[in-house]
Amino acid sequence: MKIVVCVKQVPDTKGGVKFNPDGTLDRGAMLAIMNLMTRLVWKLLFA
Image 1: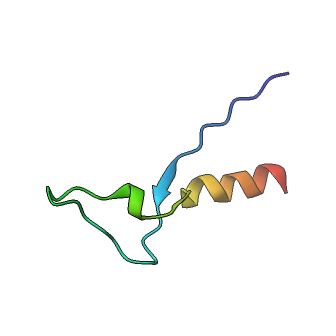
Image 2: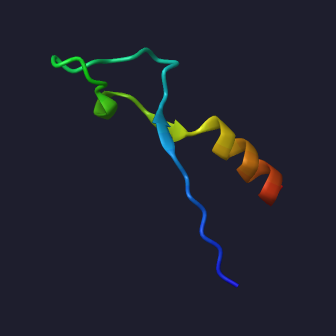
């Protein structure tokens, strides 16, 4: 059996949010973390 899991990474805003000069998020300056809902489901499935 093969299982495919989609994981969404979102910027970690605990360290503050950084913006580019054009007003968009500077994702390169922030850490990427796993989406909260994805992390909760991951824990339920594989705990």
